[in-house]
Image (tube, one colour):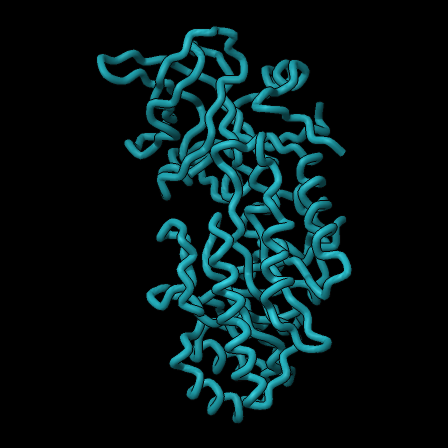
Length: 393
C-alpha cells in the first residue's frame, strides 16, 4: 500500500484536518509502517532469521498492533517493556530481555512468564539470575551479550560496542565465564548476543561484527557449547536529511551482509533487534508557530512543541528535517526553530531555511517515529501530546 506523504508535501486533506487538531501532536503514517514491515519480511523470507522490534523506540499501541500483524518478536530493555509487550499481545516466547540493570523483580517476572531469553550483560548478573532461578526451581534461558569492540562510527552517546561502554562482557572475561558456567545449574545457554550502536549508516561495520561473531562462536563450539541462536542486535540508521527520498532503509543491503558473512551452524537461527529503522520515518511531530521574533542576527521561530515532545536535538544535537507545511510564500528566511520550554537547549534547529513564516503556520518535524513520543516528558507541567494516524483522515 503506497504511503501518503510524498516529497515533503502533506496532502491538502491532511493539512485541513491538522488545523482542527490541537498542537503539538504526533502524526503516524501507518501505510508507510506497513511498507517497511513488508520490506523486512521480504528480505528474511526463506532464511532462519527472526526480527525482534526494539520496543524502546516507540511503545504506541497502534504501532505495536501493526508490528504484531507482521509476526515480529520484541526486544525489551526493562521489565515494564516486557509487561507492556505481553499486554499488547506478544507471546513471551518471542520476547528477548536485555539491559545492564535488571532488578530481581524483573528477572522473576521474566522467568515466571517464560520469555525467550535474558540477554545477560555481566558476570554479576549471570550469578544473580542463576540464584533467582534456583529459588523458583526453573531454568532461565540466557544469551550472553558480548562487547565485540567494534566501532559503530556513530554518535558517542549511542555507541554500545566498544570496551569503554557499559554493555556486555569483554573477551578477556571468557575464561572466568566458562569456569563459572560449570557450576550454574539453573542457567540454560541459548545463544550469544551483540549490539554495537544505533543510527549506523556505514554498513561496513556490520561485516566487522560478523567476523567477531564467527570467532566467538568457534570459541564456544570448541568448549562444547552448541548455541541455539545468535543475536546480532540492530542499530541500522535512517535518512534524517531526506526522509521522502529514502523513507525505507536499504534492508536488502543490510541483510545481505549477514547472509554473506555469518557462519550459522545447522539448525541455528539468527536474530535481529531493529527499532528506529522500522518506525522512525512513519512519524512526524506537528506543531504551530506561536511567535516570530526578529533579531539583528537571528530570527526565532517559536513553536508550541518543545524538548518535552522531542528531546533528541537537545540531548544528542541530532538533526531532524523541519518543514513549514502551510506557508505559501516563495520568500526564504532562515530561522532558529525553538520551543517554549524554559531551557536554552530547547532548540530544534539553527538557521533553518523555511518559507516566510508567521503566527499560526503549521510546522512538521520529520522522522520522529522513533525516540519521539516514547521519550516525551511532562517537564514544565506540559500536557502529553496526542497521537493521530493517517487512518483518522
